[in-house]
Image 1 (cartoon, rainbow, N blue to C red):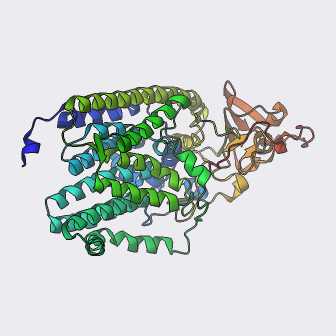
Image 2: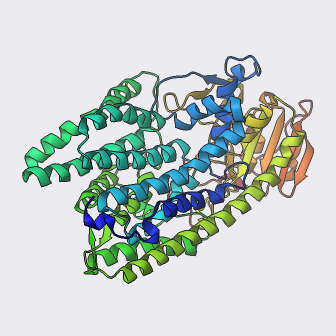
Length: 543
């Protein structure tokens, strides 16, 4: 150990500090019984089908869904639920997994900073708010888990490289790369980009020749390549669906750079992102702060990936958006005080960074408590729903891209998870997930996004107006209708629907199949299902 590493550690460089940060990262998710992450309730419905597939406990599932295990790069939480649900139950298992993601992300960032700089620089603390980024709020659970694992794997890659234990690293990273790919392909790809850039710098420092460095870096990274074969097999199957589209959508890419911490309070979230830019700008302008060549090149590689990555990859939306928080994270931990900088100045930076992180944790905790209250209020309807009900759900939405999302869009998945009822919010894309929908009687109301309804027809969206949805859904295919904060509608559309629970605008109805649907025309409904919204519509599609 050199003299510099024997000097006294400062508070932000100790293991105790890393442990405290990890614990703080978990705080927002401690209270909610269901993590209020937009897509997660829908995934929980799939996990319930997964756990009961082949057991005979809910034979009606076979009439509604196909569930087939297959080797795809999107199985992280699914496999963990399969392993631990018998021990803890489904909802506690999902909560524990969600609880682990922010601490793993925080530890990964700080560990990388420690390996690159020798110690955790004060500026690294400004990266910590990304542990609750927009992709996590959106409920991209497998993705977020894979990225947390990829950050820690990259730190281990750097450590073993620093120790020149290349054989051990090669042996370890064949299974590590495969496991991260299995969790989610994105994490494996990010790990490959980070490892390649780090090896390129390390080899160049040894050989002083970029071509030779690139060749040797490529050889070192071959241990991460085997999942590429699995990916080719996965995506070449004739059953695989999903398009890759929306390249170079510059307007969207610029917006993603402002939405990194999007949650509930727009000004606060935007101000927090502005701090990222301020710190990064300070790193360019301040003579006391510099960038690591290692992580600087990693950041440039990730920027290139972000530029060329389309919005939709294999049918999965927001592919480029998901990368943004981690791009910020790598850029921020690349910063470090230059030698000779006053430690008082560094301590001030660390205190400011920690204060911002604690503030974000406090705001996210308050936000999650409010979302949890909304969940508890709406889920009271399930107390009045029989097991195995053929349920159709309509969740109110608007045509505008409001900063605060209701996070109720996939609450129907909880009806599937808790009451084994039909949920029309499930995604159905062959090869993208293990579950596909087969309930043909539901017609165009079988799967996502049929659960989302609006006041008027939204441009560039598949969502239906509430009037059209209530009028047209095939009543013979369902027994119950669950309305979750729907827009206003003509109450004549409730003909044949017997209310069994109401709470404000939300309601649960039992369908009386002896009563015909209402005899109404679009003229009776004021043509509102086809009207254009008066306000500016969302410029980005949510599906």
